[in-house]
Image (cartoon, rainbow, N blue to C red; front, side):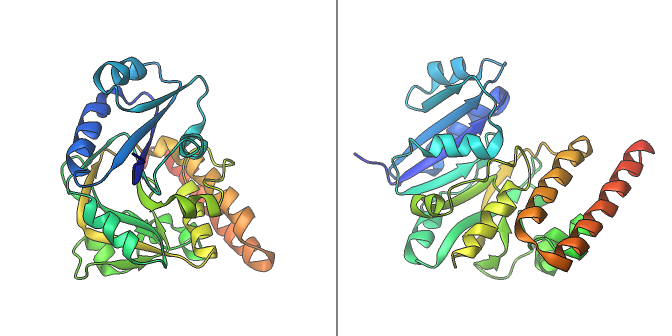
Length: 270
């Protein structure tokens, strides 16, 4: 029987996370006909052998190339059989049943992608949605996450919120939508590909919705040593989505940010 939902996981040396992630999906996908596809980006930690032995029903793509996040997802989606997709990071644990999330997506044709509330390993709130890049938030990147006071505090008063972009650590959408925008832009290796992805969903007139009443843990791996990749990602984004004087202004803001980050790194202020 064809699954309704295809879960896509890009794995790179994520052996320590796989059991908790896959066991949580097994539990929280109850009521949904689903398949799980893992594309392994040439891990060196026995991830593939572990999956084969312990999760034989998982469809494993054992890549000998590290495709990065975006292309890894694109390759996995090519074999996905579900009408709907859940793109989820390997270092996650889903805490709530996902059938209501899928039902929410299915009931509204104007929705392009859905995300849910993200917590860290201590179950503390982490921002998971934001506004599209502009001169202000390229100068000070924390403003990317400052949609309103509720998104700063993590205390939400509504069932759903329309946002500009959602984190690629959890994205649920129609496979048809993914295909319409040609998936992730493979120019991005890591970081900002999710912002670009949501920008292109917006470009075909579909909403991005955040549902705060459903939760997952994400053992976030970002640290300041990865700032160059983050800046590079936004450089690609700006080159794609801005023109004329606006492009010059936003580029200048990002370059100032880049210098500040470099100085802070040198002075060990981060």
